[in-house]
Length: 398
Ligand code: AMP
Image (cartoon, rainbow, N blue to C red; front, top):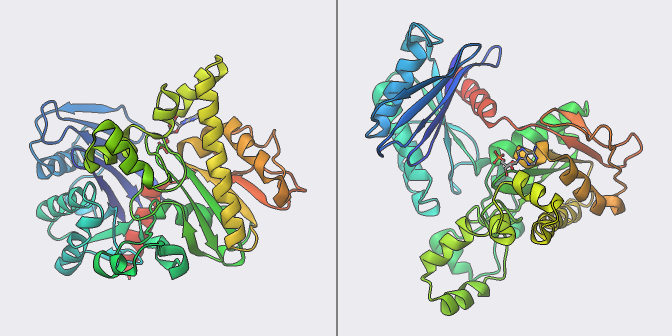
């Protein structure tokens, strides 16, 4: 079965066509600048050269049509016709409390996703536009919604409720939801597999460290806590997001700098994190290079980032009353060799011991702790597209 995986943003659309039987990626690509001048589709068929198609994409429906054309094109296509696309899996950012797992899309599901728009105003409307465009062009192809929040719905009340008046939860559903759920789910399962165990027997902490980052506690297969909250702003220090701060800082800075709450929100989401701290870049490679060149602010920024991750690991080891495995994933987690060493330095009290030789790896599944380590440390590349394809295939088949 060929599954088209779609990740739709407000002006972009990423896709992969995956054969669910072999799990091979047949093609992948990206539409950029949808609805803006200079739209471009970059299509990469497996084993063939990348194709760049520069053509107007006034809306997402046109973009989806172009993706289908690219996938079925006689030269750079990978299937003969639309009939060979058997299902579509859509990444949807926020499923609120309504969706604790992936679901086959129908009108009722669309309405329920729309009702979550308030909780993710930048993401869910774009996800819905992507689904609507696909439904318009492929009305007979079954579609599945895979939510970033779903895996975290097993959190107990004590983990998801904030210390706020309860009425905000009752009236507006203000609570911790968590994000990157597809990745935390996939990586925790994969970590157990690499260890030759089942996830249901283990306490696992997943550190998804990318431009956005989150840490989760997966206790016997169920997420019991995660660092992102109502929005992806909470938690560890990120590329451009502040992570957790004293909430009183917002009013303080708004007054000092004469900012509106919306402007402050923008500062916290786009101008903070390691970008704002280091004044160098949001890219960890640039910050590391600057730190190695003697830039003290860059060094302190990296130290603060590793420290923020280590504190969440400590919190979640306490939440689960122990930990068997800690998995590092996403851009920084998979590739930043020295970063994993720095974080591991905080974990001696757990009996962890990183193996410097095994840790000398980028983007590969591997145990990176010594035989003697009481807690297994792992590098586990995430694969959200594959996870979405698997969940789509499972729901469409049965
Ligand atoms: P992601 O959001 O998962 O794509 O991760 C993006 C982040 O991964 C960027 O900040 C990159 O700097 C970081 N990254 C990618 N490769 C490396 C590397 N070799 N060393 C350090 N950071 C890396």
